[in-house]
Image (cartoon, rainbow, N blue to C red; front, top):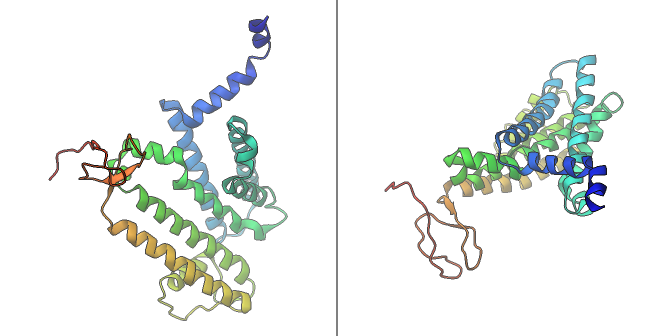
Length: 267
């Protein structure tokens, strides 16, 4: 009876198992699937940047809506395989995806929402699946994962704020005509260079410039800290669970347990 009942509904568990394998498996097909999602994020971000330089055409609107549908399907798949869909639904990353989907599907009606799709860049290097794949194929990524995450945070902040500057200033500021102008202003403000050739207008423009300096400088300093600090080894302590240690460590600095770190014999 039980086996026949399961045979009547083979597609539901099969689909969930198949999706979980694609998102979490280590076989070549699963890795290719996750890299495809990575490329999808790149296209979403790149499309917004490209459209600030050219006049939007019909094929661009169609492409935006297709991307919106694909990201919506991908979000539904992640909710479907989640152990607790409700908990997954209240995550910040889920709502970031919802905002991006709305900005893509509403492209023909609300062009000013375009800069929100920059948020999709949050997933480029913060995705555990992508980072896991990169760690396995690249020793550099294994050693510099913290720096890569810090760099991705700074990258997302710069491009998101540049998009915000472009959307809020392009129609009222004669110095900002393309996304490149907004990006140039953001970088010079963040680094406190401040050439003064571009200035945001209005009270909200000045408040935005202040936020760029405060938040952006903090992210930039965090990146410098991770770049110049000694690389750590990813070895979990069997006693306390501490996952990151100095590469020449013999004992866990938290509990004193002996740890074994594989090295390549370099001096």
